[in-house]
Length: 252
Length: 319
Image (cartoon, rainbow over all chains, first blue to last red; front, top):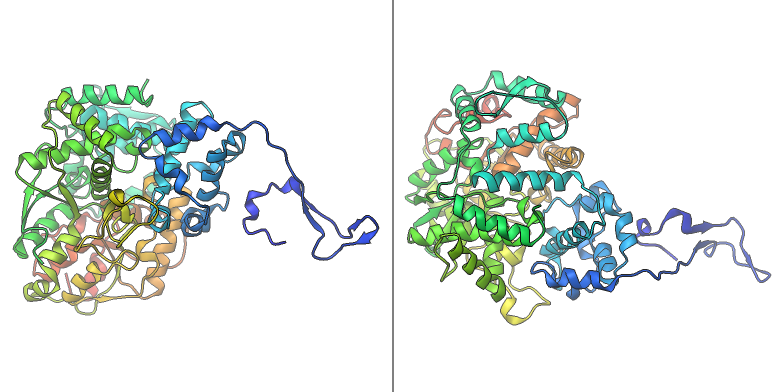
């Protein structure tokens, strides 16, 4: 039997024999590949309920497992075949938490390109559902901090603070978060680019084009970095946002 | 024609005020030339991009609802965003506010609490490319072109969120599986959902030649992960650039500052690694249109592009 999504079967459960004799009958040939059965008894049916109760996760039950999402997914096709949206939905609905946890290292790899949602014939908001699953897992402590979530949080905090984001400050703030020592000016406490530690790739990336770059562009960005563009009338709205995020458990 | 309106609320988004200023400047130039009017959305806030929605659902709704409320306050029923991420976020909020009564009520209550006018009616969001195509169109571009982009072979890169998902962008006639009310209808102005062509049409009207670029024209550039998961982004960008180069493109035309930044950053990194066939520069489609309308390279801020498209354009005698 052909296994279409071989990545779903753990290698240790696949048994392949040169010669296979069952009850005295030689069944070698097509039948020499066996997938060992498994018993599942620790499923959690409340997990799916929690996903369904969030506004962006409620379409999870419309899925009929056609795998169109997986077939469209660039991460599945070009990067890691273990990233499989259809399968994640399946596992979440059955409440197979440990299987989900085994895939935690690829689950965050979604690039949010929405091909899955776009092509779903059943109207499942696949990308939103997967993010709802991830969020639920994070809330229950089933998944550790992963790089993109750290960045998402960092980004959201920046938005919460100023109402807007600034590319340069975001970039260097993020570099600092990753453990590089970034030099900050003493008055405004803003990171100064390229003084202190900078990852080698970024140095090479920007140093070459910077020489040919427009001086006006550099001045504008430096100005923005020092005096972060802010949204006026933000403080009251910020309080509401903060409250909402606390309710959702996104802020501590 | 004439569905969206000649005068709209313009939501530039954070990056157009900073690193992608060239897109902002050239967009204004093109709009002016085409006889369209942009009304800058005063005191807007970030749409939350692709990041905030992974952290908080209601918070992202609120961020976008505030912008919508500001647009209503300025007397607009239509918001136009030049960034795929921004237009996606606004359209997403629009979708949830329209189809989910509970979300709508809660958002309105919270808006009032935050000192912003609640939404009685939800403004529609369009991508700026859609707007240009429908309110001006290739014919008008042709009329205005003074210096045709003759001989320029362009790979038109739309990125992922311009037509996707059809629930939010309403690029598809129907969507199965949901009840009638929640089923989004295709809108008149929407681009083709799998084979978008608006940018091709506009740039061809300005004299450029489009090269074969499917299916990479809507392939993701890995943007949301460009700072947290570099290997994925690098691979995706490599595929895009190599497809463009091998099909003979001189330049990649973009319509999203996030895609643009991602393409430029990783292009440079790939070139340093010695990957073949990746040296295609990127420029915003408005910059190319601006050039065609007779503006100089300086006026459309071509020098701000990291990937430096000037040599290519100079070689063809266009800049």
